[in-house]
Picture 1 (cartoon, rainbow, N blue to C red):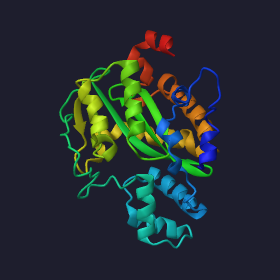
Picture 2 (cartoon, rainbow, N blue to C red):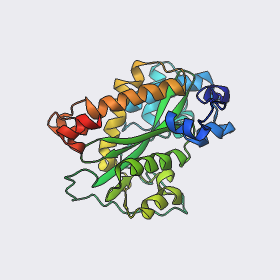
Picture 3 (tube, rainbow, N blue to C red):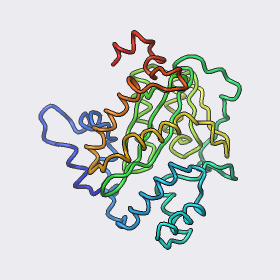
Picture 4 (cartoon, rainbow, N blue to C red):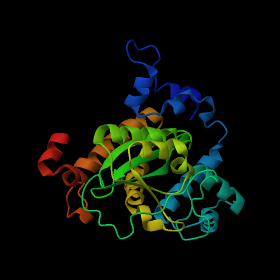
Length: 287
């Protein structure tokens, strides 16, 4: 997505509505609006096509690494080498969930926290929240989506999109969730740099929230939000050809409202996340 395409989402001259407020309304981090280097002009159409195929195959088989993705692409008629597949997967922020050494390695100056959920009976809302990042394709490029979910109810508390993998949009989503819903006892993430950095962990510490991080090679530690990504992609993203961020934001808002308040979950005895989080009567009022 080019800088000009991003700017179509923001109107600087609207009286009484600042750019900051417009970014909040669009759920678009200010860093994504102001950062001129966040455009996709350096991504070729062929790479975008390959990334589209990688995204779909990875969503079907998240245990596939670069070797199997390379085989898949070659069978589709794309004679790519493994190095190119690895480069594109890094750009997309994805890797095989299969156990292997050095999974989700943080930066060396970032502290890694222990996994606190083993053996924990998570039986009420706001006991544990979790978060993750996924790649979302657009017609002419891509963005990244992060969400914060209540573990017990699967209720999506907040979400943000960004054109970069910086931690700003993750922190914005966290601030929004805390502002609207209070705070959890424990917050669980993977060991990615967006979550191990002082900016994100500092907000958690400021609010007295215990920090939990997935163990290396433990794909099931954050399983519920991984299932959310699969639902978002199959039920919304892959059914549309989104042209720009503004269109994507509008449709994601509708989808997450549907996911929270209308979509029953078999694992929740066919209740919706909102009915578990708020209770049946309050869920209707919250909607």
